[in-house]
Image (cartoon, rainbow, N blue to C red; front, side, top):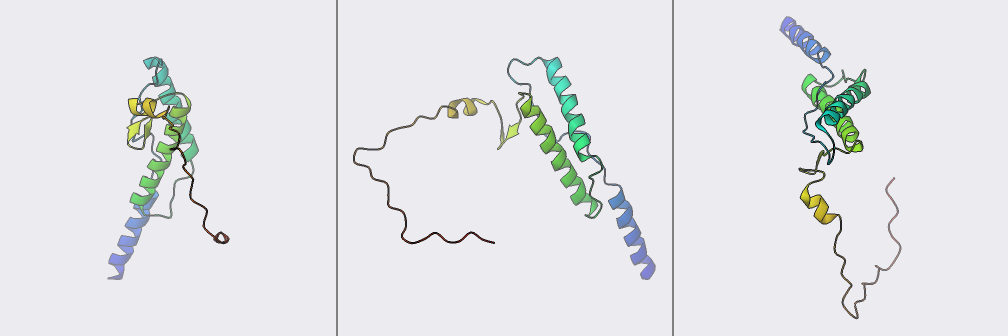
Length: 133
C-alpha cells in the first residue's frame, strides 16, 4: 500500500513538473480596419513573443498540472489580447469582437432630457457605512 501511494506521489510530481508555458493563444483575433494581412501577421507574431516572455519563468509548480496549465494559458491570452488591441486589431470582448457593428452603434448613445418637472430622489438619511477593512 505504501509503495502504491509513493508511486502516485511520484506521478503527481512528474505531471506537475511537466506544466509548460503556452506558445499560442486560445482566442481569435482579426485584423483591424485598414490593416494589411502582412501587418496583422507581424503583430500576431510580436504579441505571441511578448506574451511568452511575460510568462517565462512564471509557471506554477505548486498547483495540480491541469489547473496550472489553465492558469498559464489564461495569462498568455490576456497578454496577447492586450498587445493585439493596443495595435488596433479586433479582439474578443464580452462574447464579441471589438469593432463589431454593435460597438459602433453604442459608441454614440442617444441622451434624452428628463421629463419636465423631474426631481431625482433624495439621498438616504444618515451617514454611509464605513468601508470594509
